[in-house]
Length: 361
Image 1 (cartoon, rainbow, N blue to C red):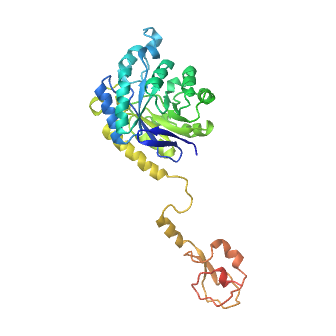
Image 2 (tube, rainbow, N blue to C red; image 1 turned 30 degrees about the vertical axis):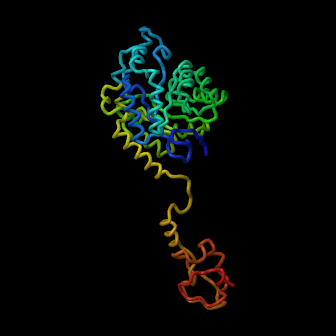
């Protein structure tokens, strides 16, 4: 089974196959650049029972250029209204997480027993995180799958990496995976991700079978990063075997104005989500052939076995007339029926007696 272990404020946590789903809350830009709102989001995540809260670490100047040329303007009609007609620089000016918050947020997360880590969007952002936060693992966003210089630097830490694949092609993912592994990454999670940022679930675009295929194709732990509203799609991912799930989180009193609010979960929704995932884990369970419970083990007694269905005298031959395969399972297993036919009884056998080897000559 593919898995790895990290150190958390609560102790050791193993992430991977046949482990509880590692649940990540993405704060993204939902703090609205208000420190108190960021604190609320971390508290919501901890109270709901998430394993980790993730920040996004960049400055407008590290992720794009302050320029109004047409290719820097956001035009995708399907993006949230709060993004439209802005330049990339303007959007990130409004969305970035102030670096001076990070030590304080880390202290709070430690106190609450929740992992705090982050996504770097440039080598400069990575260097800042490594020297300031020193997280136990790193996240690579969908858009940075092709940022090979960044992947090389992150891999050199030899820390586990969780990477969203988004719209990356199989060849692009293969290059990213190989780059990480060749430069030091041993523990890798790929998150299937649809980068549509929708206020309405879009199941027709989700293609969760891609998640399963990626796990096999790239020999990695698999998971899902959700950018849809609601919890239906990530719950399906959990049922299908996702080991890691990431979901955006928003403070209750700022959902409407938050940049990513329309596809984020507030405190009530998040608690419902965590409870549902944990229930789903129990249903999914582990590979276990045979009885699943003591009740089922007891019910196995009512399988068929070989019984004498007539009185049989000593030295009488066993036949389909005096032996039958019937319930319950006190006699010889049904697989021995044809072997027993034609043999003889060692002693008198009453009707209704379960057949055993001791009764056969």
